[in-house]
Length: 265
Ligand SMILES: NC(=O)C1=CN([C@@H]2O[C@H](COP(=O)(O)OP(=O)(O)OC[C@H]3O[C@@H](n4cnc5c(N)ncnc54)[C@H](O)[C@@H]3O)[C@@H](O)[C@H]2O)C=CC1
Ligand SMILES: O=C(O)[C@@H]1CCC=N1
Image 1 (cartoon, rainbow, N blue to C red):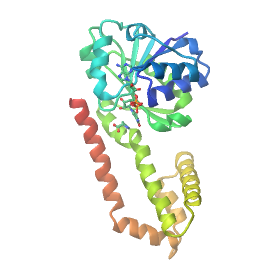
Image 2 (image 1 turned 60 degrees about the vertical axis):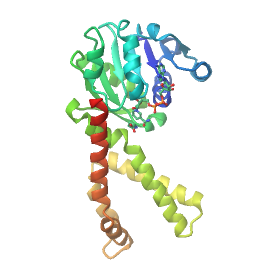
Image 3 (image 1 turned 45 degrees about the horizontal axis):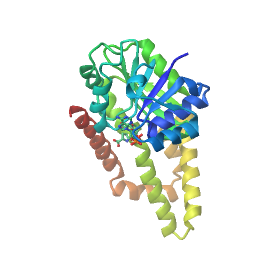
Image 4 (image 1 turned 120 degrees about the horizontal axis):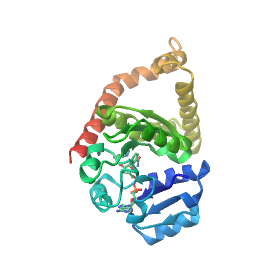
């Protein structure tokens, strides 16, 4: 039995714990910490998990840190004397490198840094993982196993973690912005909003499934849709003329740079 504590069970923390419970982890193996009593009551009612003190949570085998980056230094300070090298610390905070934790803990505690994304709430997360200097293969494997019920995981070197955050961690927001624009465009073209939403959502879902599972590149899949002299090429011409590709390059670079800034303190 592996005991798991989720410290800061907000949107992402709750999604992780819900995934663990769905996959058969008994609620008695999971504890949480929260800032508000109402939140504790909510998590108990919804998932049957107990709220404990930060100190008690620090004694779990796997300690998941789910607070916002701005709250992390305070939380790690509270934990510093309580966690031991037998624990595994898993942080999902954007920007903060593994050395952020290592420098603040008084012992060589293994740290695995994870960047999930919001599709974790429907079991379709893209999780990016990297190991700190005291964490090894076994720790990464433990976290991969833990996250298996909530999506897919890939390992990256920490030097590429901010770039991976820009693509996957923030990624859903770009897709939602694009979808929102498409729905509005449908309304502009005279479609009822609910119908436009359904057309956009199912089209995005189908396209994502092809991109993930067909083994073909995005460019090949786009070419398949694009008939000579047809409707698609007329639209693509406009997207390129409005600088879609350049905007995406700049946007992801900005996200990568912001992640680096957050990590630099
Ligand atoms: N929202 C997103 O798309 C993603 C967020 N993340 C990261 O996940 C982390 C959490 O983000 P969200 O779940 O969106 O935020 P959230 O605000 O929903 O959850 C954070 C929770 O931590 C609680 N909290 C703060 N300090 C605490 C403390 N000392 N002890 C116990 N609880 C405490 C807050 O009350 C809140 O419920 C952040 O570090 C963020 O960078 C990572 C990937 C994607
Ligand atoms: O915007 C953020 O900072 C967080 C991290 C990735 C997604 N949301």
